[in-house]
Length: 389
Image (cartoon, rainbow, N blue to C red):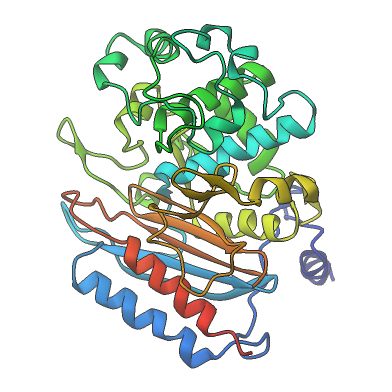
């Protein structure tokens, strides 16, 4: 009877009590593709192209998950999570360094939550919240400029700016001179999102990792999504490259995030495909999953509304159609939003199709030579093409 009760609660989306009395995270239901309106044979083509990617050494392995109409219709692991020093098989619960997926999932979502609460205004100058930012012509750069990469800030400042520690690194970022006036150019900027991460910490009064854990990941049951994931076993992580002769496994690959102790607005987040599925479904649900709301539906609509920039169409923190959209499915609707990560990750979701596609790999392992963005785009195209008209 107790086991039956847990199953019923999970199906209803209320969460379930574990035998230890703790609330277990609600998992998305597994759905039969044909029952929900997909062609299974078309969806199965994903197997072939991912296996080809592994054979062509675009990545050592990958985890692919496709969600449709409220559940998971495809979920598989391919290849190896590690090639060197010895091969290890990829598993569905492998934890990946998300790289720039950190930008929308952690930082932009946090900014939108604080906007909901009236603590941040998108068209307000960043210097209202971070007075040190008001120098060298940055006084008119707004929060929205940074969310859409229109702040005119350099893409990446010198790694030497981080050599004297975190405090001085942030001081040097705040003192940077823009390359262009706000709104004049689209410059995809890690620096801009480092500033946004500092903004979240300043306004919320919590470090970015603590805020995101309490306000986003814990409510959605994303127990394996975090910065500095020291609590998880080392063998759960997909390694990236080597630093100082040691394989990076559960340690952030991005050198600037690493210099900031692994917590930054542009990179540093780790997660699994199942955890990201909860987040993606929450956005498709208008900001709610498993009985927990992280954003109001109006806020999700604002976050994913198209913003015309000099570089194309962006959402707030999200890509829509720009020069960075090679990982976008060709058949997604105009409302689709997504993002990629340098380490070989990608997430796209389409509110019109009620579909999301998650691709997680460590394409930089072992020597930084993999290439997966076109492959991610093909997977999205195949998934959308599988929808029966």
